[in-house]
Length: 198
Image (cartoon, rainbow, N blue to C red; front, side, top):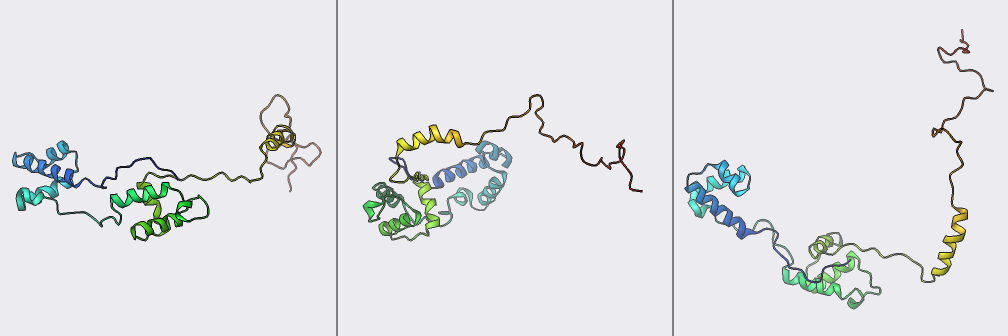
């Protein structure tokens, strides 16, 4: 797993920008624009504009103010995410693990130790995705591997034991079996040598 050197953590939704869009819609409503025109000019759905228009009729521009955050607050803020990112970059051994391999349970342990927030290892991927980390699988090779012996084996022995296609008869690319002359004739209808069973 590897991430970028510096990461700016932005909120998932731009609440301020959404509120500004609704304020522009209110100005357009005041100017007498139809809902379809407002939707096209702001690049939003007609359903959203219809909902905004009803709120505008009930409470004016105040009716379109942000109601607050949508959904549940994230359990980790931007500062905590930055600390987690920096801690993961130190490597697994720096956190007391025997190997330098990061696993999801290990990362969940580090996150809990740094932030006090406990995550199921299966959900750690969401955090890693926000940190721009990706899956990196280690190449499995024996410690005793002799690269020169492997190279020689591939060059000499592998070419001998590798399966090769059998020689095909020249002419046709079809791999069909010819009819056997030694077997009984076909009993198919219309075959000249076919013997009828009755």
